[in-house]
Length: 239
Image (cartoon, rainbow, N blue to C red; front, side, top):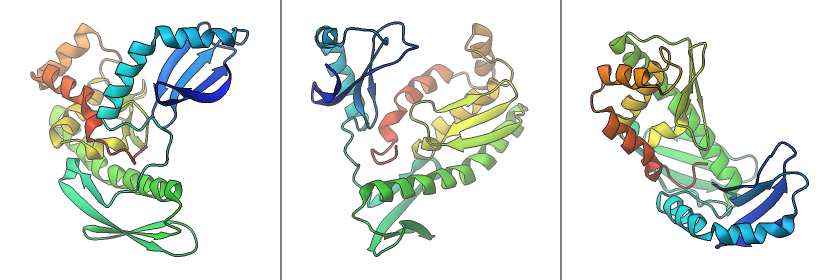
């Protein structure tokens, strides 16, 4: 088995990685099912490995699909409405088909996407870039507020579009946040900002770290659980 095919209704890609020491099977948003093998692995064995893991693959596929994750690799449908729950804002999206590059302009509670709107990938990419900019505008002052409230300082903030992690904190105190936070309820954004600020004191998830978090937010266990299910708030087009 090699190249690209299908399994369990998902696009399947099998590829060798010289650094891989074992076979890795994973479901990747926007790409489907990926199998990574060691360089000299006999790829005729991949079919049997997939059958052994079929139950897990199907359960994971169903869970990710229910959470709104696109696993098909098909270009997502551009939205008509965007709900930025974090800042309690709903924006209507209008489309104007014309030659040139895809551009997004903002006017109050409306966005105008102009350009060759039939090119869905380009349209979605432009909307994603716009969302990252809006997330940066919202999250920087928000993080500053939480920082002042807790007395926990940080060195710098980066906002990006990431596939999985909601955020991270480097050993130098640079906090990276996922632009997807803009789609989450405010309570969860507050908690995620606190989570990363606490990492400026503890760069791990040790008992000491969680005790430190609890000092600011005693209800952190419930909030962590809600964050783990936060993908359901993120629209399929934002990749």
